[in-house]
Length: 181
Ligand code: ZN
Image (cartoon, rainbow, N blue to C red; front, side, top):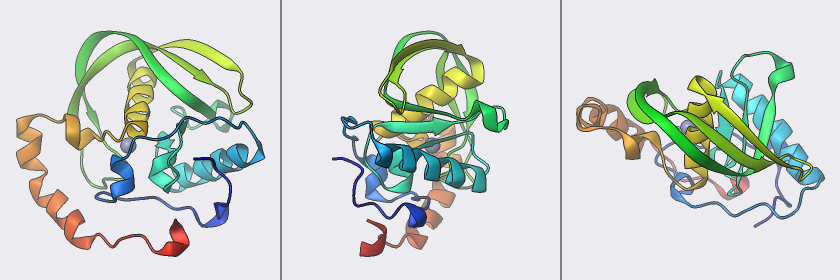
């Protein structure tokens, strides 16, 4: 799947339990203007929602790309395409939320340090090392591209604590209209 025929101005956040959040996304093969426009729109949605990261399936586009900015400085906007997480080490629990699952915070155990291999929006290969919030964000967003959410990784205590809120989200869910696909 490629990112053509998308109504970029109307892309909005996709909420749990939308089935698009459970799908494995397709690798990007065309590093073109449409991909750049998708990223641009995703940065806008991420800011509107006060997030630090956003994956393409969270706006309903099932391709392997995410944007992030962990500092709030616009100069730190970065998009990663076809990301792979490598060499995770030193796992630790920390609290995470997700823009697609509002009002839920859960403890997730992840490596605090890892490498990221990816491509830029222009297709240039990159490999980076990150730790703490950056490493956690890389892993959270890469999970999205594999259809994996924080509620799929949470422990038994959080499973009980979030049950009511997840039921509310399920009850409020309306399948996407054709216009948003
Ligand atoms: Zn998320």
